[in-house]
Length: 454
Image (tube, rainbow, N blue to C red; front, side, top):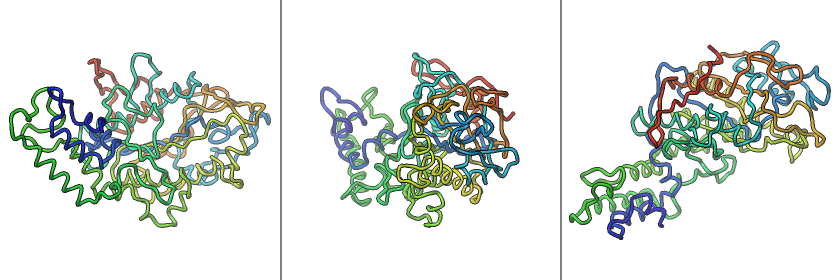
C-alpha cells in the first residue's frame, strides 16, 4: 500500500491527506505497473512527411548467427559454413539459411544489411549500442529508440487510451527510457500471448472489480477531491502531480483509469477475435502470437512495439537450438522465427500497413564464423546482419557484405550509430532534435552517422 501512496504524493505535516489515501485505495485495482506507466498514454502523430508512422522491432536476444540465417557462406570450409545449407530467395542473388524458406519468399520486401559492425561483444553493452545508437557511457544512459518515439508522441499529440511504446511480452533493460522520464519506458504486456489464458498485465479488471464498480470508486474519489477546508487543500510543492487547481481527479489517475476501462485498449490487446487461420499462420508459439499482437497494436496506432525472443545465445548444440528444437522436428528458433516474421510482413502488406510500418529484425551481435568444440558459435560483433522491411526502406536489396568467412565487413561497413540514425530518419525524428537530461544538458538522441539508404 505504501507504493500506492508514493504514486500520489507525499505526507503533509507528518500525515497523509485523506485525498492521498482515497486515491491509493481506488488505484489498487488498477495495478502498480499500470500506474507506473501512466503518463506514457499521451500519444499522437509525429512528422507526417516521414515514410514510417509506426515501428516493430523483433529483438533476438542473445545474438543470432548471421552465417546461419541471413549471410550464409556455402563456399566456405565446413567449420565456417556450419551444418546448414543456403537456399535461393525471390530476389536473384540473395541467399538465406535453409531454415528460412518462408522468409525467402518474402525477400522482395527485405533490406538485408550484412555489414553492421561494432567492437562490443558483451550482451548488455552491445544491446545498448544497437538500441540507442550510442556507445554505453558511465555518466549517461541514453534512451532507446522506443522511448524517444514515446517522448515525441506524448509531446506532439493528444491523449489516447493506448500507450505509445509497448513491449511484448517484455523488454530487455537497454530498451528503457534512459535519461528520459520513466513514463517513456515501455508498457510491458507481461503475459505470454500464446497461452489460452493470456491476459495483459493490469489491463483486465481485477477479480471482483467490474467496470461499474470501478466507475463508482472513481466518482467517490472525485467527490472527496473537492477540498472542504484549507488544511486539506494541497498547494505548491505538496500539490499532487497532475491535479488541476480546481480539485479534480489527478490527470495521471484518469489516464490509468482510461487504459483499464477503454474499449479501444481492450480490443487492441485481444487476440481472441483473430481468425484461427491467421493465428496458425503466425505460429501457435510465443514469438508467433507476439508478432500477431504487434500487428494489432500498430494497426491501432501504437507508434513503437518491441517483440523480444530469447534464447539466441547459442554457444552449443547449434542444430538442436536453431533447427530441431527440444520437442523435435522443426521446432527450433529459426523455423519459429521464419514463420512469425514472414507472416508479419505478409499480414502488414495485406492490410495496407507495411509501407507505413518499419519492421526491424536484429539482435545485439552475430556469432563466431567458426563452429566451436561444443557444436555452437560464440559472440561475434565484428560483423553481423540486420534485416529491415517496410516504412520507406528499399525493398529486395542487400546492403554491404561480409568477407568470405563472415568474419569482417568486406564493404560498406555500417556502425550501430548508422543503423539507428537510419531508423530515426525513417520514423520522422529530426537529426537536429534535442532532448534535455535531468541536469539540464541538451542531448541529440539521433546519433551522428550516415543514412544507410541515402
